[in-house]
Amino acid sequence: MGDLLSQQLLISPAAAGDLIDFGSVYLDGRLERDRQRRLAGGEQVTINWPRGGVRRFYQIDPARILYRDRFLLAYNKEPGIPSQQVPADAYNNIYAAVQRFLESGSAKPPYVALHHRLDRETSGVMLFVVDRSINRRLSDAFKAHTVIKDYLVWVAGNPAADRWTAADDINRKNGRHTTVPRGQGKPAETVFQVLAREPEQTLLWARPKTGRTHQIRLHLAAAGHPVLGDRLYGKTPAARLYLHAYRLRLDHPATGAPLLLTAPIPQDWPPPHTLDLPPSPA
Image 1 (cartoon, rainbow, N blue to C red):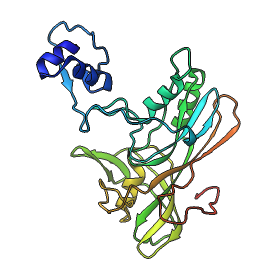
Image 2: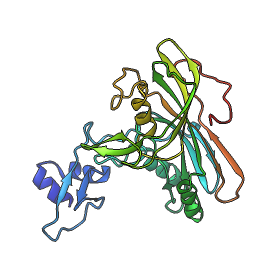
Image 3: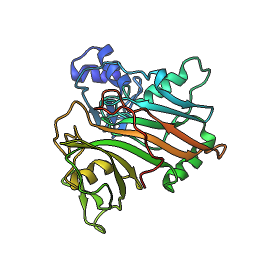
Image 4: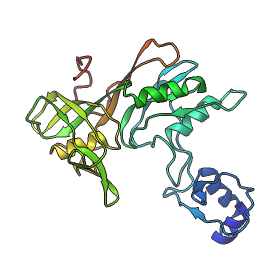
């Protein structure tokens, strides 16, 4: 595979191997990581060129690990890093970096499973399974919506109500996600509560009761109060997307004990950086 790419792309064998190792090459629609893979003929090879080149820059910061035991690892995700691989890059993402972190000093390849994701620009709590014995139990908990997710979010403007529930369905139209009337898409429900008001922006607590793609961002955009920094749905200029996965609450899938995982309010957010937060907005 490496020699073929080198010949067809007019690049060195080393550069072709780097593209394969980096996760930029797909064979019949599936990621191909074997430089020595022999082709039978008729396969479709796709190269997704990484915009910044083959640059390995991301590792997790151990200081951002929120919780770790033999079953679970929780990490305070930075904004701007994908949760998992993207078509041109299988290296610079949280999932792959957690694998590399656990491999260090380990005699055997670690097991890592991811049951929820955050958008690239969203920060906050991400939870990984690191022991396959609890994989099914945590998966079932997410499906049953017994894992409670609380977000903090700065939005443009001042909502009329101090608390409300958004319940528009979510669907895809023209290749992008959008809200639609109930019954015309996948059900989605989010509870919002005002925490602080400023003249032109408001800090909210958001609790999604379902887990649709971009759910919080779409419900807020539909309400006329897009997330600050949301270039896709709000086009409100800001230094970053001001959406933070503040807290996960669940029963530990191995012990059954209550587990509360909290990611501190980011220091690059507008003040206040500390709040006397209630246990729940609902």
